[in-house]
Amino acid sequence: MRRPLLIFLLVVLAIILFMVHQVWSLLTLLVVDGAADAITKAELPAIGSARKAPSLIPKIIHQTYKNESIPPVWQEAQASCVELHPESEGWEYKLWTDAMSVDFIEAEYPWFLETFKGYPFPIQRADAIRYFVLAHYGGIYIDLDDGCNRPLDPLLVYPAFVRRTVPTGISNDVMGSVPGHPFFMMVTQVIQGYDRSWILPYITVMGSTGPLFLSVLWVHWLGGGKNIGDDADGGRLRLIFPDEYEGQSWSFLTHHVGNSWHGYDVQLIFWLGRNWVLVTIVGFAVGLTLIASGWLGYRRFAGGDASKRAKSPTGHKLAFWNRWRQRQHEYELVDRHEV
Ligand SMILES: *[C@@H]1O[C@H](CO)[C@@H](O)[C@H](O)[C@H]1NC(C)=O
Image 1 (cartoon, rainbow, N blue to C red):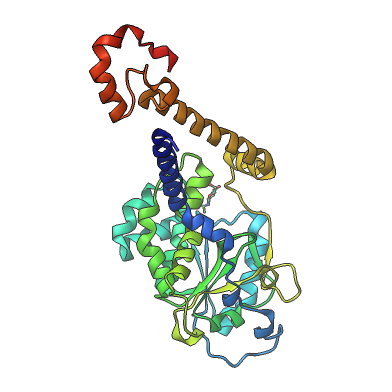
Image 2 (image 1 turned 45 degrees about the vertical axis):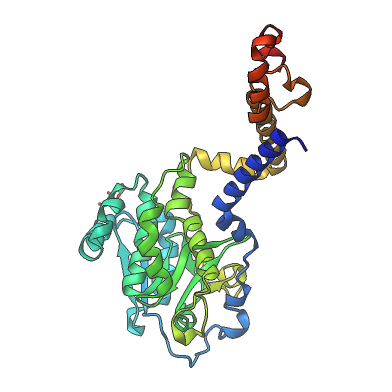
């Protein structure tokens, strides 16, 4: 193979490897299924029957809204969770308003206050606060658009759980944890470093505080071999799969209308998702065009075409040197535009 072509291909390969490395966590996300950590129907007690295992997670339900006036559309879902977890059975209910959240971060995590207040989208604060209250108090966080179908007590026997989403990743809409669980501690410790803008609001929110952020940390967590031991060790993060989440008689939750923050960019992303064949073809076309124009540019710069090399004023080192010596004699033959 000609040397300029070889160099060019090596550079392209290096760039591709670099890009794959950059998105490696996302690619891993496509193949990690987490089945080993599933909370299966078989290990759950039937609705209404008691379970002997000791509770680890404290009986606290956390929800968030900007103030105490929950919009009518979510009141039914909220009431279903409050009613199934009464104070008389030791449950506590905490609604984190914007003002309470800022006070809590200021008092307990002052190093995070500036980032917390500086998030451009309110949903980022709603995302972030749930990790901090779980790491701090423990309990179960539930999004306002999730209602309860049965008491969540059987989930208290695990040190921590999140909801597995299909086809990939985990969600942050229903999560439980003991106080100080290592996974949520890690989440609160690294969240500041993920505060970046990805141009589109949806991707910025997902990647800096939302489910994509949490899923990437989950992949790192699994990859670091941290999800080991049995439940009593306190380190393991368990997963609720779709059937245990909603839609079956034994599911824990019911889903109500939500996604109040989705904007124009989500339409675009969903459109890209629906038209992924077209998007893939266009992506390859653009990629190959970039590589081809890179090659043409490189060849022009380095004089990579052997048939024209002798006439080129540039070229790789050796050719350049040969030509340098002949230059005075051949100068009039040089035509840059032929290369
Ligand atoms: C809560 O926010 C809504 C919407 O911004 C507003 O209409 C309502 O008056 C607020 N409620 C309280 C108690 O401040």
